[in-house]
Length: 572
Ligand code: C2E
Ligand code: CA
Ligand code: CA
Image 1: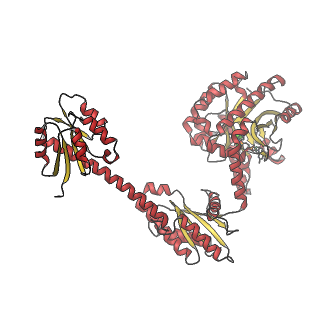
Image 2: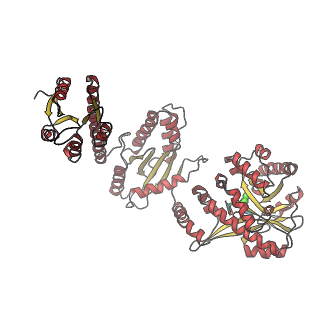
């Protein structure tokens, strides 16, 4: 053997074999075959690296050879370059379909033939290399399972942390431990802003600090991405100290971005609880930290778990509840304090849960806004309200308007307009009787869409109302650009210390004439006391919703209230 790769040339025309031998004999050890059958037998045990295969041969032609190769595992990967003559129009293409890597057309051009063979071999080799790399990667992954460290930061990986923390706590049964879960807020932003190396540097630095913090009495590990865990004797290091230390260590890197760590702390009650569950609890505590909070860590308590379970229950049961009509619409009247009559009412949803009792929207509306279910729940409430409006039209001497809440998600939904219009048609309602409450938050999130949709709704006769005005960041731009029929102002705005309340009143007193000039009505909600009522009367606020008059109530109770207090004819 002279170390050359073996090439098999299979062609029944001797002249072709001679030419090809000349092309390749310097780089390859050449074997020849005069027909397909001979080619197949020559392959046996010969470790051929490439086959030049004539497609038209006696005995067994090139196609038969190709299908033989494909059906024998040991030859399936053998690179084959097929050879055709000009007039065998689609033979080349057919050979590719049957597994040849390329084909060349006779008569041969030496350069082309050599290049094609080279390419085919390079490709084959590449595939081989890729396969090798895959196998290697797999091996590395397997190895990582056996080694204990996180390869980037050198602290324990998740599995090892679980094991070491459990061992630590069980070996020191008299000591109380806490398990802390760390997270970098908006780490993705850091990865987007800087190079990967910067992100990695932060992680390594945090790991370095936490390992030092763990010392010999604790253990730390990296769970994944930017999440770390520490198990230490309770308050071995105070949380404030720990967080400050973490901050200043990372700040010392001089990265031009504020890296903020947050942590959840689980004081271990039962050391035999699996460590991953301890971490789940620490993580639950972590999720209680608000982005707006100055506080950067939170200690677990069992109410968090209850809330978590309740949340799970809500998400699990919502579909069924909607089918089973467990959601119920309550109505809270809006009074005209000048006449003492009911001027309108707001539809507010409740959930009559078979085992949990009455659940108020504060518990589920935010979850449904998060997962999109609110759109369907809103539709249900709108339908109930429309049906009720139709009944009231028969029962009452003057028409009564009702308002429904329109979650911000509806504005991403194309057919909201049609839906409402169909509803008013279905129940034969004047659209003026349906008021749509849109929060200023919805407006701020999606200005163009909210303004456009509201304009279209108003054009079709519906009334639009800004809800929770003044709760978040109201802007004058909104008043200018978002024409609505009513504005709802939360009386909570007037709470607070003396100075704050006085400023609140000044704002409201200025707002009332301003809103009037815009031709917008104003409803004050959340009014609880007689004093508030008197004050509001003194500054000309007529329309009041709040506990001072009535809480939200079921439909039947609301009917009775309408009988008792009377309904005011709509102004226009
Ligand atoms: P909201 O639209 O601002 O509704 C007014 C909330 O204030 C109601 O809470 C009502 O019961 C409460 N409230 C009324 N008067 C007073 C008072 O004098 N003092 C105090 N402290 N509170 C008062 P509720 O029914 O718990 O609803 C909470 C929120 O849930 C609503 O706030 C609304 O944003 C949302 N929501 C309720 N029903 C629906 C609905 O069908 N669809 C959507 N998307 N959201 C709804
Ligand atoms: Ca509302
Ligand atoms: Ca409101």
